[in-house]
Length: 261
Image 1: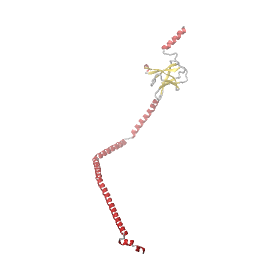
Image 2 (image 1 turned 120 degrees about the vertical axis):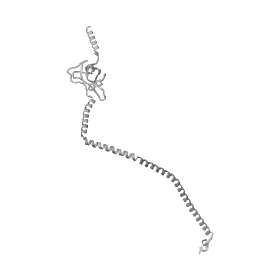
Image 3 (image 1 turned 180 degrees about the vertical axis):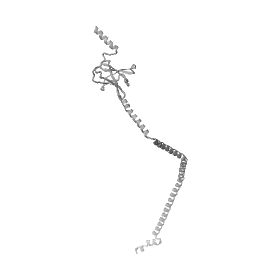
Image 4 (image 1 turned 90 degrees about the horizontal axis):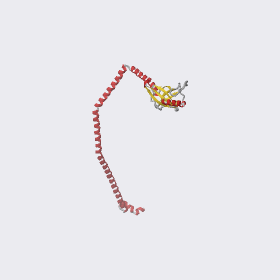
């Protein structure tokens, strides 16, 4: 009876403390100055192997706003005085806790407090390296500004002034030449119009010349044909006369006695 009462008392006491004696995990606590987005259920790792998860986070306003984090860790993991709970963040911004295990001289149990800290992330490393570079650039700029003496500044200002004067003269020249350019453009437009009109007038004249040339060709061809026809007619008449014995040549050709001799 006394044993049963003791067991019930033990279970009730742990229940009031919020401890689940049948749980397969132990709860450990770590206090951090900051947790950088660490949230409930974020994973806890040892060498990349998950051994637990974040159980809760609580802000301690009476301790300069530090944060106490409850870690739910597998009971099989031997946690002791050398265990260091380090908050880390990967390149994608995911936050987790890595347990750095050493040689324990004393093992911790459920409810004990571990040492913890924050790992320097990539952004902090980059920021730390960027500051010296920026300071070096600032120093270099200051040195360069000192190297440029007053004479160099005067020469630079003089060059800029000359450039501005040249730009002003060019603008004035363009303004003065504007009217001349307009007149030239108008004259070119007028000349183009005259050429177009001249082309229109030349077309009928050229057509007439072409027709005249065709007519001349036709006339010359007709005269040649007529002349040839007249020659052929004369030849035909001469041939008939010779055949009929007319004329000296016809008599000679048709005289058989003369042919025999």
